[in-house]
Length: 356
Image (cartoon, rainbow, N blue to C red):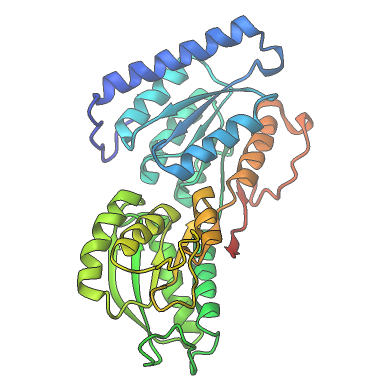
């Protein structure tokens, strides 16, 4: 069994019920395969998500399934943000002898036990979205990670903001509403202590400093990657800082969209001509920048609400994961790998800035 590290609450159904639901889904998937004929995908791969309610992860998982369609049968599990549930789901899948497991861990520190458990079963692993510690990745030569460097997203987010403010720290443009030469910013943080949240926030601030921009942090508020939580917390933040706010930098698009929803209710982003689009030169407009590249975020950018996002290219990651899985299952002759495999373990996909 996988040792449980820092277990989290299982949610309303409880761990046992959640695992029963996952096993029922597994049985249904295998039954469908038997009925339809799955000669081209005899290999079964477990696809484990930390939380399918996360919009980015939901899209990412669908892309993995689509890309793997002719390669193997991907059997999906949702941990509902509980490491305890995820551990039990993985144990249940081990009994089915999968060819490989793709794991988006709830808690990256749980990866140590997962790697040791799957090494004992000789089941290769591709981690994604949440990077295990380097010393844990070194435990076994058949575990891999596909993802993006969180530092890069924070740096690109800062570049988007600095470009909007004129790229000249000694002479900010009209978006410096107070004219004091300082950018007043609210930061929406994904999760306290989460690797990506910490790195995105740190690199955002370091990038401003490295370019000589003066910023004043009005608040750093944790909203746990969630739109509704960002919406609620932005209400209190605006009560304290509405008159001074010049920039909102969010660790992800979902929180950015929640912030915009609350800001619109508070009189920002006025659509005076009822066109469905807003003008960023209007006095009521304030720049909000996100990270992920959600479809809704791109729509918000086109409508003029969200200024920009940094696209976390899940489609390229999904393609890389499927190619890597083919090789891990079938050996080096099982297909070409179009992505660089660093240190025989890591595939890195670059972020991409996106504005209107």
